[in-house]
Image 1: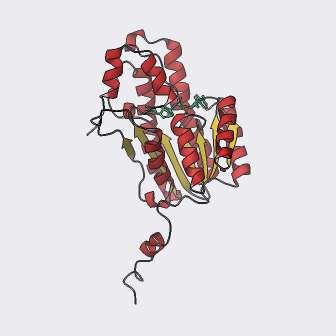
Image 2: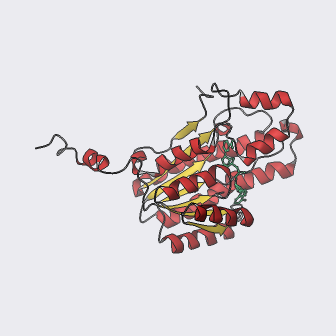
Image 3: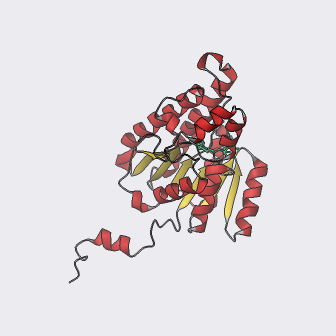
Length: 268
Ligand SMILES: NC(=O)c1ccc[n+]([C@@H]2O[C@H](COP(=O)([O-])OP(=O)(O)OC[C@H]3O[C@@H](n4cnc5c(N)ncnc54)[C@H](O)[C@@H]3O)[C@@H](O)[C@H]2O)c1
C-alpha cells in the first residue's frame, strides 16, 4: 500500500499540473488592459474559459486579436462597472457564454490626478468611489447571485493603497480600503455556501495606469515611486498575472478573506 493512499487529496494534487485552471470559467473586469489583460491571456493559455469585460470597446477588440494571434480564445463584453444595469447584463451574458462561473476577478479600476486631499475635486472623488468601490460591490452582488448554488471564488484587485497611507491619492486609497472591507466581510458571510473572497494588493505595476500617473509627476516623484519597493523597480504585469492565476486554481482553496500583497516587499 502506498503512503499516499490515506492522503487522497494530496494524491489528487500530485496527479494534476501545477496551479491547474483548465476548464475554469473566469470573468475578468477591466480585462482589456494592464493587469487584467495579462491575467486573461495567462489564464486562457492555461486552459481556462475567459470572458473579459471592459468599458473600452476598442481595447477589448484589440485583445481578441492578440488572443487569436496566440491561438487562444477570449470572449469580450462591454461593461461600465459603475452602472448596475450594465453589470447585470454582463453577468447574464457571462453565464450564457461560459455556461456558468467559477471565478470572478473584479479588476476594473481608475486612478485620479495626484493632489493633496483638500484640493481633490468632487468629480474625481465621486468617480473613484463609483468605479473602484461601488463597481466592485455591483460585481460582487452579481457574482454571489450567479455562484450561490455552485460555489466559486471572487478575487478583488485592491492595492497596497487599500492597506496603508497613500499620500496624494486619498480618494483612490479610500476606495481600495473599502474594497478590503467588502472582501473580508463577504469572506465571512458566504463561506458557508462555498463562496470565497480574496483580494490582490499590488504596489506600483508597470501598466498604462501607472505610466499615466508617472507622466503627471516631476522627476523626484517618479523616482520615489520606482524606489518605493525594496526591489527598486516597478512590478511587471506578468508578476501579478501569475499570482492571480494561482489564486484561480484549487491550490488556493483554504485562502479566504486574505489580502495577497504583490509589492516587492514594500509593506514588509
Ligand atoms: N498598476 C498598478 O500599479 C496598480 C497597483 C495596485 C492596484 N492596481 C489596480 O489594478 C487594477 C488594474 O489596473 P491597471 O494598472 O492594469 O490599469 P489599466 O488602466 O491598464 O486597466 C484598467 C482597465 O479598467 C477599465 N475600466 C476603467 N473604468 C471602467 C469601468 N467603469 N467599467 C469597466 N472597465 C473599466 C479600463 O478601460 C482599463 O482597460 C485596478 O483596479 C487598479 O486600481 C493597479
